[in-house]
Image (cartoon, rainbow, N blue to C red):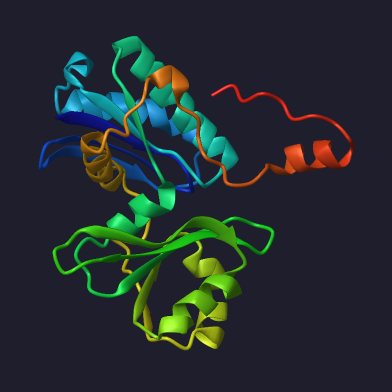
Length: 241
């Protein structure tokens, strides 16, 4: 099983190619450029470096949200275009699930934090069981930080925070989190397409792949423009990706 994975859900742009249990290549950038500038050149550069024939791919995996509305649309459009052109399925992987999967095998609970603006975070709560299976304790959601802290403090078990929301909320965590906590280091604390690919392999075995034309990202909440349109009495546009 050879999978091309894409994650453009946040500040990071990341692409990877995984074949079974082997990471053939990964290209990750977190530097001041829009995903519309970086994503396709990154795929092209990675494909060239590993001499990838796109026709040998079995599936395209994509971070399906939540996250940046623009970033998700760019990643979704790219994945759908490739999937349709190659006639292979897409596998949508929840963004915060893949972010948590970066910390495979840790014994602490895992809490990804993405800055969702409006004093909220895209988050969830995860752990790996004794047999290393991935468990979702609290599914992906958009919440004020204090609400996920309440869930964490409810059990008192140690937790690891990671994601681009950590710098935004770090001071608040340090003031309010009563459970033992730590922060993931640089090599593990941002989105990685390899983790998207790893989870996609699990989802494919569970029958969760879908036709490229049917894929839609999961934004979890309305964009600012959509909220303003509804407040003005208008209707929402049909999704185009």
